[in-house]
Length: 627
Image 1 (tube, one colour):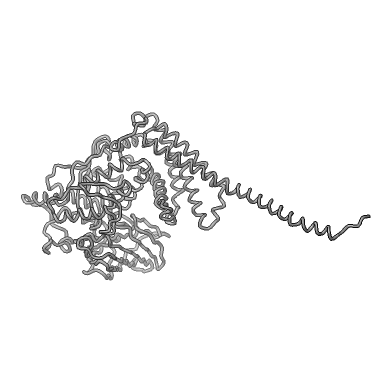
Image 2 (cartoon, rainbow, N blue to C red):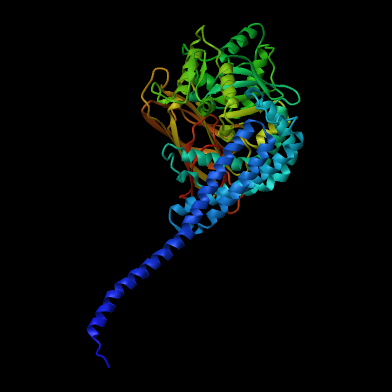
């Protein structure tokens, strides 16, 4: 038997061991890479390809819409559905990302958006297929529509879509439910120049808005053709409220224009500033007795230029009521005294935010040699369009003979540019218009009661609402305080104590601040006649901050407390009220309706109940809370 060198055998084994370990590690690495490729690589590739395809199909759809080609629109919608399904499937394989902190939230949002998109496209396919028998009559045969004819075409299409709204309602509801819980505040404002947060907000608003349009706003949709001049034309009075000189319904009435809608075709038929109307009113009242005794707050806090108390009530100060229908009824009664032959079917109020928001989408507009843009103007540290509108208001107030009637021309230019813009901007335009109406920068007062009721249901009529629970509305009126509301801010805190036996004890704290330096005409002392509307029967206890003793009165089925304050540039002031609200019945949740003042900024609010913070929010519209 041959002798075996044990040392050599052990040495060979020792040399082979690292090789085996390397091969084992290599095999393990390959397995891991294969798993990672299956778990991450393939799904990510699928997400990328589906998203790329979806984007391409969306662009093709936009082109098809612009070209009015219904056949291509149908093909594009179907292709988008296939891409959305592929995206949803690929995202499904990445389910494990949901467990990763921070990234999981964005993944969840992505899943919700893709599911919502699938439901939206299903609804879109149903509506588009329903238009097929009428495509020639609707001008959907491949010929682009001129900008000025787009509203007319929209009216015709809307008439054909309305009968199918009930069919698509479940799909739109499912889409809205998918995105309703998405918190857009967690998204960055921009990423490499791309407006991330704004895009996410627009997408969410458009999806939720589509659902609201066929549920809460269904009556408004049904009334829309009539309001847009189908079958008979409609004339509207556009009133410009200067929100930087805040008044009860949104701003100082500065200018007006007449707008005609005839089967969707839009035109402006006249425009001027409010002082011209007041001149007509003065002339008319020289030959007859006019019931124009000014309300007490105007007599007390808004003297004539020479300091004497006012003895007449002007149209420019007619919107003293915080309830828009009440204020517009008063304005119209004054307007009728002028003997003007220009009649109208309703009043649409706009403020500077409406013009700014539209110009931000459409780009700069030039009127009478002046350019209006959304760029920041160093003269006011505000958007250029705001500065120019405030400058116009100042010229109007001074009564210069060469002042131009810009409102009608400006709005015609802005709307024409918006209608001529790319169809890709349509969701943004719709979203912005709804946001402006919800934020009470755009409001309607219609003579037709069915139209008024339909718009009131979606809270676009500026009404002070009835409620059986708690209530709060803070209303400020800038009486000869310049354009200082451009800079004045508020911070509101409401402390509610429900544990007292004699009623609900509430403490309201309103901090006013003006951080900007003094400017001779743009930023002076804000002279504010303030009213706090609360449930009827409320009793004022103590108060501080008002320059005059606060008083109690009743209006619009509410109790209100009024006073007068002045906020100076680079200063602040705090108004505090303690009052008792009559007890009312409620179950586990405390109901309170907080209504936003038209034209006001979106101020922060905090509501506490029995010492505990129950809600903190920005008041960007009316809030009907259950706390």
